[in-house]
Image 1 (cartoon, one colour):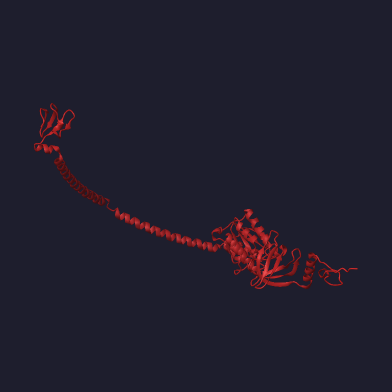
Image 2: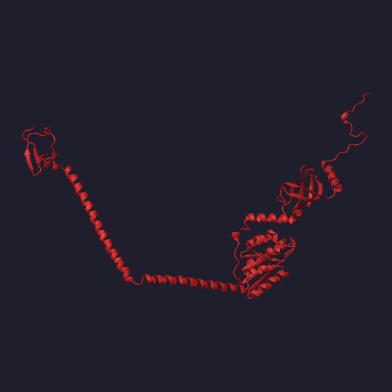
Length: 412
């Protein structure tokens, strides 16, 4: 009985064991589970490259150093909490977990938070938004409007309970208590503060009840003032139809709102002083202007008086000026007559010379020397050659004095 021989290549991978196969999906899930169970969340530092943000809002990029790289993703929910915008070439510190995207078998870092390396996220966000809005012209000096002088109605957007509001009301009341103040309270820090400030600015602007607005708050940390660094507040200030004074924090604090506003006040107190001067200062200014005006008027009167004296001196003897003009007229008349006679003499000389030249060329002058001029009748043609004549032709002969009619009898 013949024995079958099994080829070597068909033997099981492990003798005595049943073969076990994994699908690709199963293998990727095992790898994914192993990674997630064995590797904790990590902080990773690297340079961002290949950054792309599709319509979904998720952020896909690569983190790399000088030797290696890893794919990374930050979903929209986590990205919405960022204070800055990631950019290619930026060195970032990312916190997240490493896992496998089993659909493609891609190893990825799933980023939950991110900070720029070497500078704070808030500072970077401030610089990025400042650069963007400057490029759009929101900070352009030519669009800044002057503040109205002694506005009748002033709008204030700030916290309804802050000390800044009471300071502004006190200063305005001390200087011009008859001014109308329209207060639009708004949350000035924390989540939703930027949206509330922007809505307050737009509401006051639409009301048409104010001639200018003060937008601000008292001092605080960078985080406390951050609502005034948000783009929505900057655009609300830019779109306001009435001038806006930004008064955020202390003198050393600068926000995006300061750059967009028509005027920046170092503090809310200074903003109130800026929009309404002191009565004493106005009175002093008026007195100074009055003094300057009176001095200018006296100076102009002195100039007019000097001019008048000069005119009086010039008109003290009007007959003298008339006599001088009459003598001048006589001199000019004599000179004109002399010039005319001289011109007439030169013209007569030229005419005599021309007449002499014409007389020398005249055929009559030739006749005076004994010659005559013969015309053949009736054609009146001058006879130059006897050959042109025939017996019996009628001729007219002109002498220096008189003429004679002849008939040809014979020619030679």
